[in-house]
Image (cartoon, rainbow, N blue to C red; front, side, top):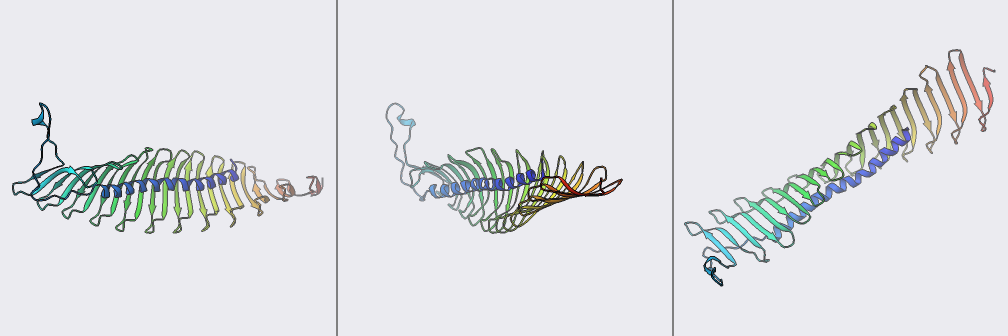
Length: 335
């Protein structure tokens, strides 16, 4: 594989990263959205200290064994409601467990749209944990004392899983995910929600991607069956430097502000070479040393044709000048 092909692979990897990051964002949005809908749909049942008598209706021989009602309230020895089974204001069945102060601490309900959910509450009645199971995602969310999600575990319909951690402002800061096609990944975000580091292992290998405060990829480290690599990009996302250690040896490439390779250094078995390129990435000058220790220097035209060559062999130095037809027009020493 040539240096050009390797750089092309690096650029493709940079472009593919956008799809990987978008997939991680979607898994997080699904769980946060479902938790919010579940909190709204499962409104807690308002209970009175002395509920109205329950009405029983039944027909046939089993009338004494069947009880029909809209709500059941279980009281403690002091007459305080401690458990409630009934229908909420949106025609959804729910079960609530209350503490001695009348605060709901556990609430289980099922919503026609979002599916069942189980919520746990602190002594102030604030949500602490929420377990949901909808058509698109199932997950567990842990909330702080201000009701903000701080940790979320989600399983999406497509089989992808993710663990998301947020800061005290509710901003997503870290996500660990395992996608159906992308494989495992880890993303770290700054206080503005921008992904600054992304680690993933996919079919093509393992990579670590670092981004700046604008979300632009600046550094990519990769390891695959083809070898290891590191690429550096500027603030515009243009690849400016790439170091690759592959099957044929290490290579270093430098590019201009347009992403065109202008200089490349390679250390192969046949010897090291340094090539300089024009604005079209055409090699115009090459300096090398063969595996036998012979140094050479070549100049090429815009079509890649050799026009001048300088060499130093054991029997002395040589210089050749060639025309556009690749025929020698002058050389020294003279034959």
